[in-house]
Image (cartoon, rainbow, N blue to C red; front, side, top):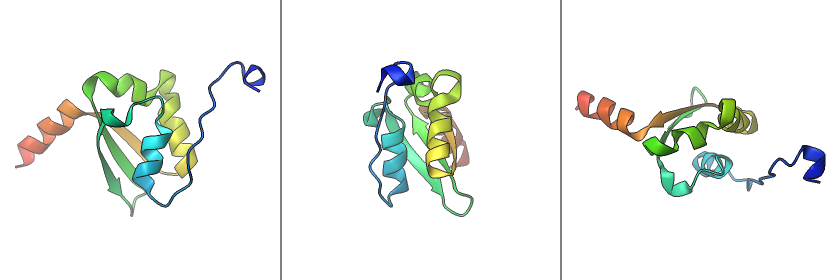
Length: 94
């Protein structure tokens, strides 16, 4: 089957009502430990995913493909933010 998909990886995401878990699972190959927080905005169907600075590229994916696939899967807007940016913004607001 992989040959028919131009050797693309196939990743399965377990169906659950826990939107944070779906986002974590769907951002494969990003290690779950690289995700520092997921801020959910249910009313606007959006989420901000805070990841380790060095893992932003992996979270977004080449040409944004990882984020696009997650957005397509859950029909939510997903923003990926560096941990250092989030900490900078949070410390300013306190």
